[in-house]
View (tube, rainbow, N blue to C red):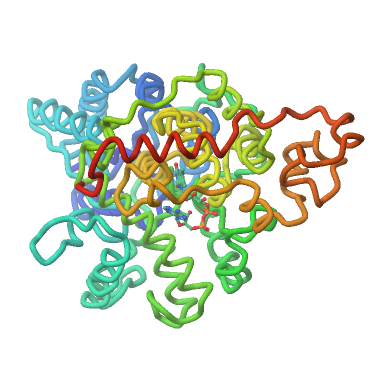
Length: 492
Ligand SMILES: Cc1cc2nc3c(=O)[nH]c(=O)nc-3n(C[C@H](O)[C@H](O)[C@H](O)COP(=O)(O)OP(=O)(O)OC[C@H]3O[C@@H](n4cnc5c(N)ncnc54)[C@H](O)[C@@H]3O)c2cc1C
């Protein structure tokens, strides 16, 4: 038997459940081995606003993956499909070409991807084959963590409690081969040569070329695992104190690797709990806080699965669909380009454009500024983030945006609106982060850096930086009135 493993959001050999099972099925006596496949899908990427920075990281990662697979005698085929509709035919064609009955892949939970996989199954069955889907994107499969009455959790803290107790009941998260309910899958063993040659991985794909320095995001699972280990060895202990300060490297910056599956959440949680003396909840404050953030990722993955409307651009709280947002394109453009006249907002928005990544604190500040102060539909911000983030992930991005806009579950209350100057004074007190990304403000003394418009005339006269584009007191009245006007938003 020969199998085909279709890589999607799982660009690694380590702890890849679909690949592991494909190799198992294709190995053994009489087995003809497993062949890898990746489908380049510019139409799909465009429809989903995937960013050029992320696509470049995917292509570079595929190059590294091809080498790792070659060491296991697993060839990697790279084919192109125009869009979602064409992909099932391409996969079925490759399965025929290599003589594979079974196509293996890790499950995706977004609505279009689920539909596409149903079509793949139809095409494969028509030629006597099957699609085998495995769970891989989160440590516990979406749907496994349920409330007492069988529903999905919509509040993080009880979700986390149940998540931890479920994992502990199953014996924790174990390493390869451990007898635990949640296990990290080993790298498949080296197989006999298949006689099939790997394809070239394209260096770039038209329409997906970014200006982001590739050196910021080295590619490959070895790099990602090394970065995880280094973070857990050296920095996780200070995470609780440092995680909110954009000017220090206080967080792991592993999100791009999780987003494309060069690293698994299972492995992150396994190694973090090890670093935390075996605990997933409690223990050393930095470790516990980091584990909790990874569990926010799990929470949003579970929500996306439980509430398909989130994949369709709908608000979690239906009443908020009645809000009539501002369509001020000049404000949207100023926010996108980092030209609002609010230094911390502009620094965050420019960090995104320059590096493909934005610090979590600034994602919250900039998202709240767009949705509350500028009162622009959160979907505009969600789209802009996806188009630029190297770690863009629908479940996380949607969760973050709906949190900031108060349209989501367990979101910020609509009346609690971050004051950018206070956030800036608290988390970038000397303005060094602002000055790194907003060079026009480098000459501004620290006491005025958070609100340069309050500086004396002689400083202002030399400044080439926009005045604030809105009056926050007025905009606050507008947003409060709008939320009150749509009635009870508590229902989900
Ligand atoms: C408006 C908005 C949009 C966002 N969009 C995305 C996105 O598209 N992709 C994405 O991966 N994350 C997104 N996040 C969550 C978070 O900002 C990033 O995961 C985090 O900044 C990544 O940096 P890190 O890897 O250094 O995180 P660390 O602080 O080292 O945390 C480790 C991991 O935990 C998870 N995590 C951390 N913070 C959060 C959080 N607030 N919510 C959910 N998971 C979290 C991530 O997987 C992260 O890699 C968004 C947050 C907001 C507020």
